Length: 378
Ligand SMILES: *Cc1c(COP(=O)(O)O)cnc(C)c1O
Image 1: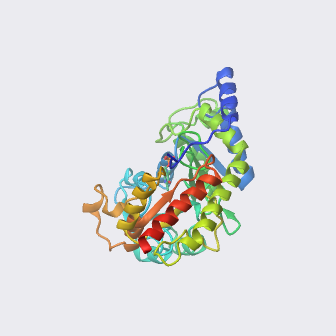
Image 2: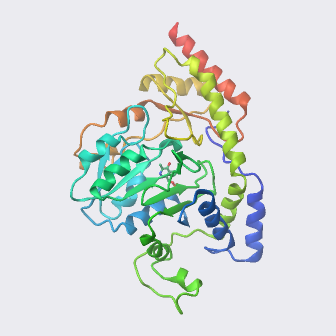
């Protein structure tokens, strides 16, 4: 069976982890956490970054930093992972769900302005599959109403909007190093703070509401409780694993891009005239090859393809279920029908994509899809 995903670890992760364990400094903010911080600040020019235990936690920190209060409203796409909005719901926010674009699952900027009210405290956008949202358009709207933007860049490591790294454009950017992403640490995340005014408080919230980070830098004589907070910092063991991945980042990214291009080139002729669409890359975004997906003609077609692939030892999976019609939110949802989000819920299909997948595997998967399609057409 070709699995849908296989976490890739090259070996230097283990070397780094052994080093941390040998030195015995295994709690947070050790040597490897600093190395990771420096890597992201230098490679992408992020002003201030903090490793977190997950992207979910980075989003929760953003919600606390933006001082989201009960009754506040937050605009977000419906076609996303629960954490994108859960972080804000935990602070009491009401979510105003926006539809996706027609051509890809990213938030449709044209919908945002209609959803803005006096209570809107944040706009959260998701760079789905590592493909950039239309950030100039989104920042224009946000700046016009003076509303902060959070970029959920969980899938978007090493991807760019025009010449700007994703995660560097909004007030905050959040990344994930969960084992299903391009760069992994098992579980892990990163908060990017693009507005200096939040930098100091972010350190405090991440350290259980204490000013311990300032204390370690020698800025205060003792540390104590100064704000709300939680334990959002990962062990240096996690950072050591992550740094191993960062050391091999170009290799990982190049391989994924080659596999992605192979899928695209194999499938582009196969899929014309049978209702299947390939990923639509916008001219303003790079592709970090996080995901290769198809948009099927219908839910029925997708279900048949999944089972046909399974019969041929290939595991493929659908993705999000629109959050506005989830069990948790349906009763509270008062907005319009979100037909594009529902379309991707029913029709988006993800194919295997991971470092150790071979070109032969990709060719085989495409050949099986081709045989499915030729059978159905005749
Ligand atoms: C993976 C993912 C998350 C959650 O990341 P964790 O690190 O597992 O918390 C959030 N948002 C999106 C869009 C994701 O793909």
